[in-house]
Image (tube, rainbow, N blue to C red; front, top):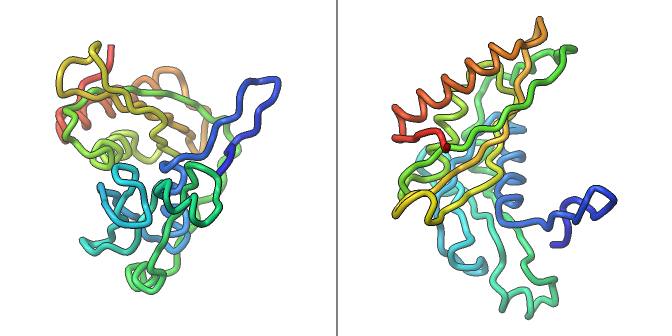
Length: 200
């Protein structure tokens, strides 16, 4: 609950939301080498429509999202409190037996790129995210969904998903041409996998 980033001279703070709870759960799982898949869920004490099931190898291992207003009121918590739960035994059982090999930290500068893709409203955000990660390839340090938009500009039954990319090579500074090529590859792969098109 509360602001994830504080207010300051740079603007208003950003309150934490259900996506932050989901990302926190993913961070815990990634620590042991497990990737969680999220899909829509509906379970108390979470708010309907703001709850995600966390899945590993087809099995539900937890939930994340915004707590129901009745729960926050009963527990005397701030409005729009978010939380996650994970079955750590199940997550650890899904972790690889081999030790996780950590990539060396690159000393070369980071390149930032944003890409917004339009897909059918029925396409899960996790599927689009997976296509973006695949398209970005090894240069991607991070791929983060930061905006979901649906409106008249996109047409009936469409939504736009915007991703922030952090790109870096281990042995060189990326050129503008290389980052543009990553963007083109993302659009191509996402188009093939989920029917995405680049938002104009």
